[in-house]
Length: 315
Ligand SMILES: [Zn+2]
Image (cartoon, rainbow, N blue to C red; front, side, top):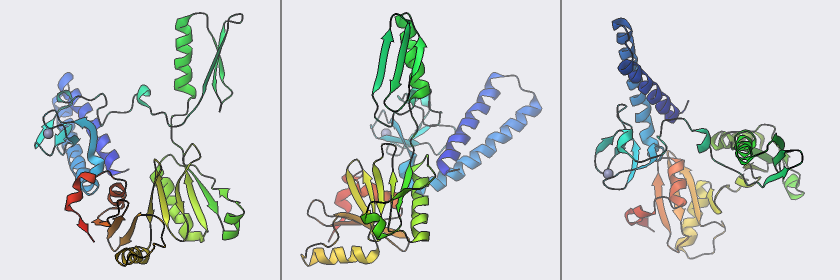
Protein backbone atom coordinates (compact mmCIF):
# COMPACT_ATOMS: atom_id res chain seq x y z
CA UNK A 1 0.00 0.00 0.00
CA UNK A 2 1.38 3.41 -0.90
CA UNK A 3 1.78 6.13 1.73
CA UNK A 4 -1.08 8.01 0.09
CA UNK A 5 -3.38 4.99 0.38
CA UNK A 6 -2.38 4.56 4.03
CA UNK A 7 -3.30 8.21 4.69
CA UNK A 8 -6.61 7.83 2.91
CA UNK A 9 -7.54 4.58 4.64
CA UNK A 10 -6.47 5.65 8.14
CA UNK A 11 -8.34 8.96 7.78
CA UNK A 12 -11.49 7.15 6.63
CA UNK A 13 -11.31 4.65 9.50
CA UNK A 14 -10.60 7.45 11.97
CA UNK A 15 -13.69 9.37 10.85
CA UNK A 16 -15.88 6.25 11.06
CA UNK A 17 -14.76 5.47 14.61
CA UNK A 18 -15.28 9.09 15.69
CA UNK A 19 -18.78 8.92 14.25
CA UNK A 20 -19.49 5.72 16.19
CA UNK A 21 -18.26 7.26 19.43
CA UNK A 22 -20.29 10.40 18.93
CA UNK A 23 -23.54 8.92 17.67
CA UNK A 24 -24.05 5.61 19.44
CA UNK A 25 -24.20 4.50 23.05
CA UNK A 26 -21.17 2.27 23.15
CA UNK A 27 -20.30 0.65 26.46
CA UNK A 28 -17.41 1.95 28.52
CA UNK A 29 -15.18 -1.05 27.63
CA UNK A 30 -15.83 -0.75 23.89
CA UNK A 31 -15.29 2.94 24.18
CA UNK A 32 -11.78 2.33 25.54
CA UNK A 33 -10.95 -0.04 22.70
CA UNK A 34 -12.23 2.42 20.11
CA UNK A 35 -10.23 5.25 21.64
CA UNK A 36 -7.12 3.07 21.55
CA UNK A 37 -7.82 2.40 17.87
CA UNK A 38 -7.96 6.14 17.25
CA UNK A 39 -4.51 6.51 18.84
CA UNK A 40 -3.07 3.75 16.68
CA UNK A 41 -4.63 5.15 13.51
CA UNK A 42 -3.16 8.53 14.35
CA UNK A 43 0.31 6.99 14.72
CA UNK A 44 -0.02 5.24 11.38
CA UNK A 45 -1.26 8.45 9.76
CA UNK A 46 1.67 10.45 11.13
CA UNK A 47 4.11 7.81 9.97
CA UNK A 48 2.72 7.80 6.40
CA UNK A 49 2.57 11.59 6.42
CA UNK A 50 6.24 11.98 7.32
CA UNK A 51 7.13 9.63 4.45
CA UNK A 52 4.98 11.71 2.10
CA UNK A 53 6.95 14.88 2.87
CA UNK A 54 9.57 13.62 0.41
CA UNK A 55 6.93 13.62 -2.33
CA UNK A 56 5.17 16.79 -1.24
CA UNK A 57 3.48 17.27 -4.63
CA UNK A 58 1.28 14.27 -3.74
CA UNK A 59 -0.03 16.01 -0.62
CA UNK A 60 -1.73 18.68 -2.76
CA UNK A 61 -5.53 18.53 -2.92
CA UNK A 62 -8.18 20.02 -5.23
CA UNK A 63 -9.26 22.44 -2.52
CA UNK A 64 -7.88 25.95 -2.14
CA UNK A 65 -7.45 28.29 0.82
CA UNK A 66 -10.25 30.83 1.32
CA UNK A 67 -7.81 33.40 2.70
CA UNK A 68 -4.87 33.23 0.30
CA UNK A 69 -6.22 31.11 -2.62
CA UNK A 70 -3.23 28.74 -2.50
CA UNK A 71 -3.70 25.01 -3.02
CA UNK A 72 -4.41 23.27 0.25
CA UNK A 73 -2.38 20.26 1.33
CA UNK A 74 -3.66 17.26 3.21
CA UNK A 75 -3.47 18.18 6.90
CA UNK A 76 -0.61 16.76 8.96
CA UNK A 77 -3.11 16.46 11.81
CA UNK A 78 -5.56 13.56 11.42
CA UNK A 79 -8.27 15.54 13.26
CA UNK A 80 -8.39 18.03 10.38
CA UNK A 81 -8.65 17.47 6.62
CA UNK A 82 -6.66 20.28 5.02
CA UNK A 83 -3.89 22.70 5.81
CA UNK A 84 -2.60 25.89 4.26
CA UNK A 85 1.16 26.15 4.69
CA UNK A 86 1.09 29.84 3.72
CA UNK A 87 -1.44 30.81 6.42
CA UNK A 88 -0.27 28.09 8.82
CA UNK A 89 -3.89 27.03 9.34
CA UNK A 90 -5.76 23.72 9.49
CA UNK A 91 -9.26 23.27 8.08
CA UNK A 92 -12.19 20.88 8.52
CA UNK A 93 -14.16 19.76 5.45
CA UNK A 94 -17.02 22.15 6.12
CA UNK A 95 -14.63 25.12 6.11
CA UNK A 96 -13.50 24.35 2.56
CA UNK A 97 -15.31 24.61 -0.78
CA UNK A 98 -14.77 21.37 -2.64
CA UNK A 99 -17.11 18.85 -4.19
CA UNK A 100 -14.54 16.16 -3.63
CA UNK A 101 -13.15 15.58 -0.14
CA UNK A 102 -9.64 14.19 -0.62
CA UNK A 103 -10.00 11.00 1.43
CA UNK A 104 -13.54 9.99 0.42
CA UNK A 105 -14.04 7.33 -2.20
CA UNK A 106 -14.89 8.36 -5.77
CA UNK A 107 -18.63 8.48 -6.38
CA UNK A 108 -19.87 6.71 -9.50
CA UNK A 109 -20.55 10.05 -11.20
CA UNK A 110 -17.05 11.31 -10.37
CA UNK A 111 -15.38 8.54 -12.32
CA UNK A 112 -13.19 9.98 -15.06
CA UNK A 113 -13.82 9.38 -18.75
CA UNK A 114 -10.46 8.32 -20.13
CA UNK A 115 -10.99 7.53 -23.76
CA UNK A 116 -12.87 8.96 -26.75
CA UNK A 117 -16.01 7.26 -28.00
CA UNK A 118 -19.07 7.78 -30.16
CA UNK A 119 -22.27 7.11 -28.29
CA UNK A 120 -24.78 5.53 -30.70
CA UNK A 121 -28.40 5.71 -29.86
CA UNK A 122 -31.45 4.73 -31.84
CA UNK A 123 -35.06 4.39 -30.83
CA UNK A 124 -37.53 2.04 -32.48
CA UNK A 125 -41.08 3.22 -31.88
CA UNK A 126 -42.64 -0.02 -33.16
CA UNK A 127 -40.64 -2.29 -30.80
CA UNK A 128 -40.57 0.34 -28.04
CA UNK A 129 -36.86 -0.31 -27.59
CA UNK A 130 -33.82 1.88 -27.53
CA UNK A 131 -30.46 0.64 -28.69
CA UNK A 132 -27.34 2.16 -27.09
CA UNK A 133 -23.75 1.32 -27.97
CA UNK A 134 -20.34 2.66 -28.86
CA UNK A 135 -18.01 1.88 -31.76
CA UNK A 136 -16.11 -0.48 -29.43
CA UNK A 137 -19.03 -2.55 -28.15
CA UNK A 138 -21.94 -4.52 -29.50
CA UNK A 139 -24.39 -2.37 -27.56
CA UNK A 140 -27.50 -3.02 -25.47
CA UNK A 141 -31.25 -2.84 -26.13
CA UNK A 142 -33.57 -1.45 -23.45
CA UNK A 143 -37.36 -1.55 -23.24
CA UNK A 144 -38.43 2.06 -23.42
CA UNK A 145 -41.67 3.93 -24.11
CA UNK A 146 -41.18 7.34 -22.55
CA UNK A 147 -38.56 10.04 -21.94
CA UNK A 148 -37.98 8.99 -18.32
CA UNK A 149 -37.16 5.43 -19.38
CA UNK A 150 -34.91 6.73 -22.15
CA UNK A 151 -32.94 8.78 -19.60
CA UNK A 152 -32.72 5.77 -17.26
CA UNK A 153 -31.47 3.62 -20.13
CA UNK A 154 -28.70 6.06 -21.01
CA UNK A 155 -27.72 6.35 -17.35
CA UNK A 156 -27.67 2.59 -16.97
CA UNK A 157 -25.57 2.20 -20.08
CA UNK A 158 -23.06 4.85 -19.00
CA UNK A 159 -22.54 3.34 -15.56
CA UNK A 160 -22.28 -0.22 -16.77
CA UNK A 161 -20.71 -0.22 -20.20
CA UNK A 162 -18.48 2.80 -20.71
CA UNK A 163 -14.87 2.06 -19.95
CA UNK A 164 -13.83 4.27 -17.06
CA UNK A 165 -10.62 2.67 -15.94
CA UNK A 166 -7.24 3.40 -17.42
CA UNK A 167 -5.37 0.47 -18.88
CA UNK A 168 -1.73 0.42 -19.84
CA UNK A 169 -0.07 -2.11 -22.10
CA UNK A 170 3.57 -2.73 -22.97
CA UNK A 171 4.89 -3.30 -26.49
CA UNK A 172 8.33 -4.79 -27.06
CA UNK A 173 10.78 -4.91 -29.98
CA UNK A 174 13.32 -7.64 -29.27
CA UNK A 175 16.10 -6.57 -31.63
CA UNK A 176 16.98 -3.69 -33.94
CA UNK A 177 15.84 -5.89 -36.80
CA UNK A 178 12.40 -6.36 -35.23
CA UNK A 179 12.19 -2.62 -34.76
CA UNK A 180 13.17 -1.84 -38.34
CA UNK A 181 10.57 -4.18 -39.81
CA UNK A 182 7.96 -3.11 -37.26
CA UNK A 183 7.54 -6.50 -35.64
CA UNK A 184 6.83 -5.74 -32.04
CA UNK A 185 4.80 -7.87 -29.67
CA UNK A 186 2.45 -6.89 -26.90
CA UNK A 187 3.40 -8.11 -23.42
CA UNK A 188 0.57 -10.28 -22.09
CA UNK A 189 -0.26 -8.28 -18.98
CA UNK A 190 -2.23 -5.04 -18.65
CA UNK A 191 -1.71 -2.56 -15.85
CA UNK A 192 -4.21 -0.34 -14.06
CA UNK A 193 -1.56 2.13 -12.97
CA UNK A 194 1.12 3.93 -14.94
CA UNK A 195 3.71 3.45 -12.19
CA UNK A 196 3.20 -0.33 -12.22
CA UNK A 197 3.53 -0.40 -16.01
CA UNK A 198 6.66 1.76 -15.83
CA UNK A 199 8.35 -0.43 -13.21
CA UNK A 200 7.61 -3.54 -15.26
CA UNK A 201 8.75 -1.97 -18.55
CA UNK A 202 12.02 -0.82 -17.00
CA UNK A 203 12.69 -4.24 -15.52
CA UNK A 204 11.81 -6.08 -18.74
CA UNK A 205 14.11 -3.81 -20.74
CA UNK A 206 17.03 -4.17 -18.34
CA UNK A 207 16.70 -7.95 -17.85
CA UNK A 208 16.24 -8.87 -21.50
CA UNK A 209 18.39 -6.50 -23.47
CA UNK A 210 15.50 -5.60 -25.79
CA UNK A 211 16.03 -3.04 -28.57
CA UNK A 212 13.10 -0.94 -27.42
CA UNK A 213 9.99 -0.94 -25.29
CA UNK A 214 6.90 1.27 -25.11
CA UNK A 215 3.99 1.84 -22.74
CA UNK A 216 0.67 2.52 -24.48
CA UNK A 217 -2.37 4.12 -22.88
CA UNK A 218 -5.91 2.92 -23.59
CA UNK A 219 -6.09 5.03 -26.73
CA UNK A 220 -3.08 3.12 -28.05
CA UNK A 221 -0.86 6.22 -27.76
CA UNK A 222 2.76 5.68 -26.72
CA UNK A 223 3.37 7.58 -23.50
CA UNK A 224 6.78 6.08 -22.71
CA UNK A 225 9.47 4.86 -25.11
CA UNK A 226 12.82 3.44 -24.19
CA UNK A 227 15.76 2.39 -26.30
CA UNK A 228 19.52 2.30 -25.76
CA UNK A 229 19.83 6.05 -26.07
CA UNK A 230 17.16 7.38 -23.72
CA UNK A 231 13.86 6.97 -21.94
CA UNK A 232 11.27 9.36 -23.35
CA UNK A 233 8.16 10.39 -21.44
CA UNK A 234 5.24 11.95 -23.30
CA UNK A 235 2.75 14.18 -21.57
CA UNK A 236 0.10 16.11 -23.54
CA UNK A 237 2.36 16.34 -26.56
CA UNK A 238 5.43 17.32 -24.52
CA UNK A 239 8.47 15.05 -24.50
CA UNK A 240 11.08 14.83 -21.76
CA UNK A 241 14.03 12.43 -21.77
CA UNK A 242 15.89 10.51 -19.10
CA UNK A 243 19.49 9.91 -20.23
CA UNK A 244 22.82 8.64 -18.87
CA UNK A 245 24.97 11.17 -17.07
CA UNK A 246 27.58 11.32 -19.87
CA UNK A 247 24.84 12.30 -22.37
CA UNK A 248 23.78 15.14 -20.07
CA UNK A 249 27.41 16.24 -19.45
CA UNK A 250 27.96 16.21 -23.18
CA UNK A 251 24.83 18.30 -23.69
CA UNK A 252 26.10 20.96 -21.25
CA UNK A 253 29.53 20.95 -22.87
CA UNK A 254 28.04 21.38 -26.35
CA UNK A 255 25.87 24.18 -25.06
CA UNK A 256 28.84 26.01 -23.51
CA UNK A 257 30.89 25.58 -26.68
CA UNK A 258 27.96 26.57 -28.94
CA UNK A 259 28.15 23.22 -30.75
CA UNK A 260 25.22 21.48 -32.46
CA UNK A 261 23.53 19.10 -30.01
CA UNK A 262 23.76 15.42 -30.89
CA UNK A 263 21.01 14.61 -28.42
CA UNK A 264 17.79 15.92 -29.92
CA UNK A 265 15.64 17.02 -27.03
CA UNK A 266 16.02 20.23 -25.07
CA UNK A 267 14.39 18.87 -21.91
CA UNK A 268 16.39 16.09 -20.30
CA UNK A 269 17.48 14.74 -16.94
CA UNK A 270 19.73 12.08 -15.49
CA UNK A 271 20.23 10.29 -12.20
CA UNK A 272 23.44 11.21 -10.43
CA UNK A 273 24.03 9.30 -7.18
CA UNK A 274 20.92 10.13 -5.12
CA UNK A 275 19.93 13.21 -7.09
CA UNK A 276 18.28 13.95 -10.40
CA UNK A 277 19.81 16.68 -12.55
CA UNK A 278 17.47 18.32 -15.05
CA UNK A 279 18.18 20.65 -17.96
CA UNK A 280 15.74 22.80 -19.89
CA UNK A 281 16.98 24.92 -22.77
CA UNK A 282 13.65 25.30 -24.61
CA UNK A 283 13.83 29.08 -24.04
CA UNK A 284 17.40 29.38 -25.35
CA UNK A 285 18.79 29.63 -21.81
CA UNK A 286 20.24 26.47 -20.35
CA UNK A 287 18.37 26.17 -17.05
CA UNK A 288 19.60 23.43 -14.78
CA UNK A 289 18.49 22.20 -11.39
CA UNK A 290 18.90 19.27 -9.01
CA UNK A 291 16.01 17.34 -7.50
CA UNK A 292 15.66 14.69 -4.83
CA UNK A 293 13.04 12.67 -6.72
CA UNK A 294 12.52 11.70 -10.33
CA UNK A 295 8.90 12.99 -10.19
CA UNK A 296 10.11 16.45 -9.11
CA UNK A 297 12.61 16.57 -11.97
CA UNK A 298 9.89 15.54 -14.45
CA UNK A 299 7.35 18.02 -13.08
CA UNK A 300 9.86 20.84 -13.30
CA UNK A 301 10.69 19.93 -16.90
CA UNK A 302 6.98 19.84 -17.72
CA UNK A 303 6.72 23.39 -16.39
CA UNK A 304 4.62 22.73 -13.30
CA UNK A 305 6.76 24.94 -11.08
CA UNK A 306 7.77 27.78 -13.36
CA UNK A 307 7.19 30.47 -10.78
CA UNK A 308 10.28 29.31 -8.87
CA UNK A 309 12.61 29.96 -11.78
CA UNK A 310 14.30 33.06 -10.41
CA UNK A 311 15.98 30.86 -7.79
CA UNK A 312 17.65 28.69 -10.37
CA UNK A 313 21.15 28.87 -11.69
CA UNK A 314 21.86 29.76 -15.29
CA UNK A 315 24.96 28.20 -16.79
ZN1 LIG B 1 -3.93 30.29 3.00
